[in-house]
Length: 428
Ligand SMILES: [Zn+2]
Image (cartoon, rainbow, N blue to C red):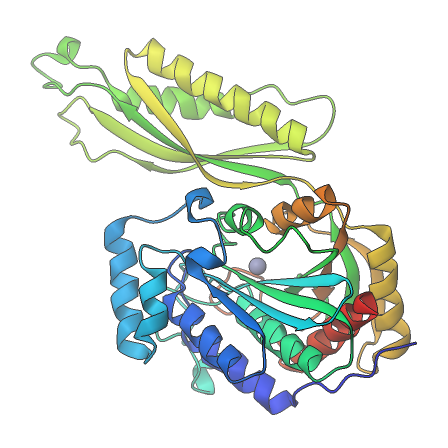
């Protein structure tokens, strides 16, 4: 039996998406976003709302910005929301929400949507619809340039559809923070709400698929790890006594060059890249501090770990070569985890045969980049569950992560229809 759904109207979804588009907040700074989601959830008959430290495991967070950055965004949110009670719980950058609908005995189905934005300045161009229609970013230097504003609308719209439907079981929506730094998946998977999930759906809009196209399972996300690197040496006068210094910049550039020289693994593809190289020292000072971020990826988790272990060896060796010390920390992480055939088939069938606005279905697509949905999928699979990462096509005028990125809002209702019918079918 194909589930009968009664989703919210297009105008509601468009308004929601635009409201979130106007308030983009980067990783772990989703204070307004979390408060607004809670506000919206409270207007429904949802059974449980878990916020911040009740939604995720704060100790497992990766890539949390410093105190000054967090409080800057916290203050901005305080000025634009009337939910100080929610903000209170999010202090220190513990953002995110899990919403639960319970209707008797049956399976538990989860939907994960990510809610964070990017540190990109949004276009003011005349062909950029959010600028001309008055819903451009209100935060200078931040933008929903990957469509996570649409994902929030998918999450809320699907939840409201499920609430209006007949089923027996439990439905949960995971509003996940900090996907862009691959820092929020791990703490959400370590939180208290994933363990009983039998089926998990993830979703992403766009990804070069046009409006009307649905990808039932997006696979092959590269396993990922990001290392924060800090070298410490000793400063000295670069002219008078360079021999008395221990040069952290030298250690860093030695490391950077050699990171790119890690031998490639015969078992599959790997990546390495270095960025954000910094040293505050003037050129007439032997640098006592230098830092950078290094990221590695692999076709499998094992290949990523090979690159990560080799990177740590290179970093330690470069430090030793220049008589410095180095500290490394994990700032983001995601394993490789693929979609399950049974759930992919179910989504493909529903989209192809029972969703009017869907014009074409791709059974399996590839991501090519990385996604920390894999942390949640891995947790569900470890408990015998299954899941898929669904692509909802949208005509986007420019690529993801660019200042003119935008979505075709017709895809909002398509996403809600596909995700709600898949969730209800899995609950049946
Ligand atoms: Zn994204």
